[in-house]
Image 1: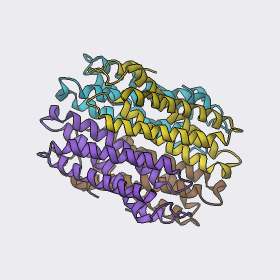
Image 2: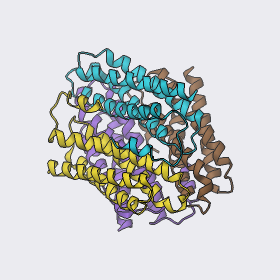
Image 3: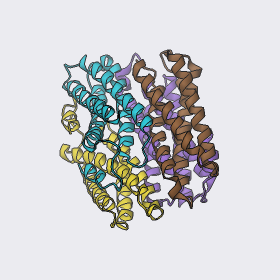
Image 4: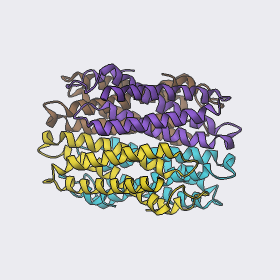
Amino acid sequence: MTFQELIKLHPQPTAVDRDTLLRCIEECLDCAASCTACADASLSEPDVQEMVRSIRLCLDCADVCDAAGRIVTRQTAPDLDLMRTTIQACSTACVVCAGECDLHAHHAHCRVCAEVCRRCKQACDDLLKAIG
Amino acid sequence: MTFQELIKLHPQPTAVDRDTLLRCIEECLDCAASCTACADASLSEPDVQEMVRSIRLCLDCADVCDAAGRIVTRQTAPDLDLMRTTIQACSTACVVCAGECDLHAHHAHCRVCAEVCRRCKQACDDLLKAIG
Amino acid sequence: MTFQELIKLHPQPTAVDRDTLLRCIEECLDCAASCTACADASLSEPDVQEMVRSIRLCLDCADVCDAAGRIVTRQTAPDLDLMRTTIQACSTACVVCAGECDLHAHHAHCRVCAEVCRRCKQACDDLLKAIG
Amino acid sequence: MTFQELIKLHPQPTAVDRDTLLRCIEECLDCAASCTACADASLSEPDVQEMVRSIRLCLDCADVCDAAGRIVTRQTAPDLDLMRTTIQACSTACVVCAGECDLHAHHAHCRVCAEVCRRCKQACDDLLKAIG
């Protein structure tokens, strides 16, 4: 995707290691889209009654990843406390959502969604470490 | 607004004290809209150059309030860890944004925005206490 | 809510009649929150299997109302074409969502959600007329 | 990104040609992230005063692309009218935003952002044609 190239054109240097940052943004975008798609796929499953908690947590995770992705994308005058708690919330949402999707691994979309969530959690944790 | 009436019609009881919950949702909505409006008003100020950090933090705060408002609105199968870290992020975003808006109190919209942020922070902290 | 007071403090006059504008913003916020709450309430209903289309359209409507609410809130250098097509999309989403919620009027939250959607559609149509 | 793989695992076939759909989702995500990054980069430019309209329209375009991306991602029980007007709004937002970014092509991020917007507009128009 082109947005990464665009972020490199920002007039100010990033506050933290740029590769760690770019990876976190990308994983937040992928996780938001994947959770939106997984919630929707679960809605179409014959056993939707069993998928209720998974749908709810995928919706939550998509919303947090969306917010975190936007905030981490912005390089102008960042506030590290705000960034930190937001990324922390995103990391937690990803863990919780992955844990629930694991319980429905007979649906391939849940299996893939859990993987994406865990990758996003790792990218968030790496960025938290880089922020210090 | 009608959404509060609607939340009371949910088939399941809320996981936490309902008035505290409803107040947090309302403040998140008001703060998201207020931060969007304040960022935009700042963009139109003759001293926009001085408003850059305020604009950026208002955009961040709007995004976090939006996500928190949606998550707190959902009553189905909530995860308290996910709720807690998201509300914590919202509380932090509100404090940081209010602090910056205070520095521009000669603009009435910044003064009002700082008040809304502080009210939202209080509502988040009250909900955090209720969640335990 | 305070955001309306804040919008009145914008350094530039609104491009269209202010009361029509403020009402549209308020209805978009209320409709976004109501659709988020209705989708979530439907997820908790024993007949969730019958509610799938309603859930999906409530999620869509919440997303469009959110975007429309933000865009209409901004008064700086607006583009009327962009505003017009966005409000048109919001009006359509509200009609479609209300129509589906009507089919589930035995659930009080669907009945209330349909009313909110229709009120939002009206506010959007009034703003479209004001824009010309 | 993995979300595309996940969408292919949906239990129901897509309502329209899948490659056209996937391309539109991807372009909406890239455009939303690029507009968020471009608005932020413009905020950091020494000539921010000249960038006000570009910032505002990038914020609008990001919000519309976000909503359109989510709606097009959902495959369960879609409503074609709702999809059509939303994609139409997205196409319009992209044209308007690209046009403004073109005026600031001395900033490389504006040049790249305009390209991404035009690619997203094309993907929206192709999907509109596929929907009919």
